[in-house]
Length: 259
Image 1 (cartoon, rainbow, N blue to C red):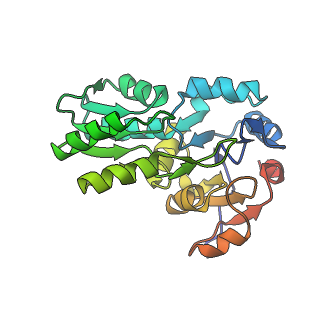
Image 2: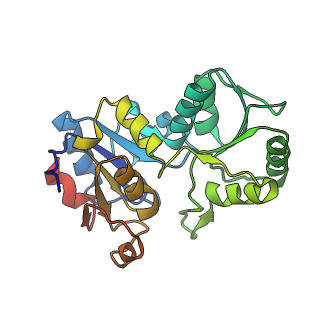
């Protein structure tokens, strides 16, 4: 096995790694502060497309985690970057929140339900049958189906919530068309994020709490991977997968000294 290069840049998931149900995970503030002091490039990533980076910056700041806007990368931004590369100045029918609609507006997309180039499905807490029906009809009429992320459930204080991947499955059943997922585990999200901070995969690391998105995305992008056990995955869960993280730790606090 080739010797690993020293870690010069870090990518970390947000929910389950830095915060949990609106509360910072012990050690998260020390890790972020160490990153900022070191001057090493870093990104906080999230598959949640509801919030804009500015929203997330304010949310994290209220919890004592000071992350600059330019160090936040969302599946909405990755989706917008993909669409801008594929079909600049296009049109889209969007199911989602401000994080997604703002990202698409910023690349010059027109949001419309009249013969759009794409149907773009993102995260929202108010999925409506009317919107899903319109999406099905537009896809059947020729619109291409794009989805911000494949997560089937998301966390809440009351328990798991249906998420983008679950709604995408419903639309796929109704249309026979599978979406292209721009977010994790698609290595596209990782590579566009690395490009945004001028980092290289061989000297970068990905920290996450999910084997099927965070660790898989980091692995496929060629990065070292660190699994933390403060989110959705237990140590026993890792045995269910045909791939493994480079390292498993209890929490983000165990990684502060590696920065």
